Amino acid sequence: MGAEGRGRVDLRSDTVTQPTDAMREAMRVAHVGDDVLGDDPTVKTLEARMATMCGMEAALFMPSGTMANAVAVRAHTQPGDEIVLEREAHIYQYEGGGYAAISGCSVALVDGDRGRMHPSSVASAIRKSAGSQGHYPDATLICVENTANRGGGACYDQSTLDAIVEVGRAQGCALHVDGARMMNAAVATSSTPARMLKGWDSVSVCLSKGLGAPVGSVLVGSTAFIARAHRWRKMLGGGMRQAGVLAAAGLHALDHHVNRLVDDHARARRMAEAMANHGSFHLDLDAVQTNMVYFGVDGWSALQTQAHLAEAGIDVLTIDDARCRLVTHLHITDEHVTRVEAAVASVV
Ligand SMILES: Cc1ncc(COP(=O)(O)O)c(C=O)c1O
Image (cartoon, rainbow, N blue to C red; front, side, top):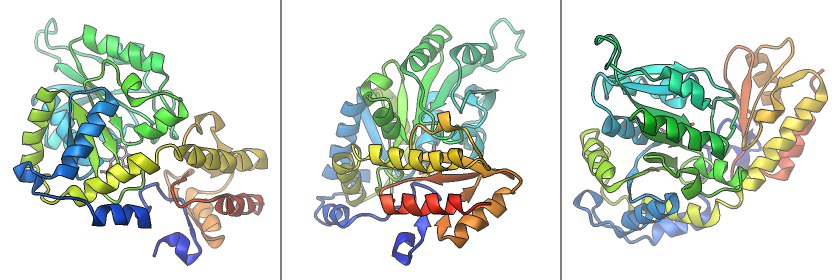
């Protein structure tokens, strides 16, 4: 039983969702095969659909977003290369240093605006060994995160994405999007994945976040890139056998859980506005563009804020000493928003 079923409002993450009955039924009836032997039809359908949706040639089903990013970094780089990343990027902050351990890469960190890098900052961060008397590593990969998790769920403007593509092309860098919440970005900016990703080499998309599937991410790119990624997925132990049961959940999510993301965004906005109107909360309302709210209460530690909300049956995560994060998702209703508004009002 999910936390909501026990009367709590679980806003810790959009990863806490339970598969719906309809999703479980889609999983039950899925045609499956041995995907390591290449004959799971449901996995193939999901991969083909994701490639078409992203305007790219090929795709590969992955157990997690972390593995999809790790494989993407490994397939785009050589040991000793450098990756340009925003300081708060998930790949840098929360993936166990896989870029160093698995790919042997260093990172050039860029300060962003709500987790988003400015193209000129990306250009300045790129170092090349040529012309440096061998002092510098070769930056060969630029990664952006859209939506930007630690940026409060903010989305990149299309013009910024396009300008970063130009920087990457001019500097001979591959371009990867950590699109764990790409569908939230597409819905929030009224765009399409194919347009957003024009010029990018690869994207990792999570099915297990706002889309509400229990497991799985998809890595998308060119046929040659996906062939390299396939080998790295194998080495990391990410080949899955009758994975069609999981791919079926992803296909169901693409059919039924994309358009409804606007509701998650509207509910996060209502919660954020209640906080902004309160006076004792601090938050960046302009960053609330999708399903996340990063917030704190003046004079309270994040643990105090978390405990106050927990008393009202509302669960959030602490992000640092002062701030908490809430994330709306498939199970959050208007009634839950009302409960959060009441809990916010009860802060004195
Ligand atoms: C932006 C971003 N990228 C990647 C991931 C990793 O996904 P997973 O938890 O499936 O490994 C997450 C997880 O929350 C994320 O927020």
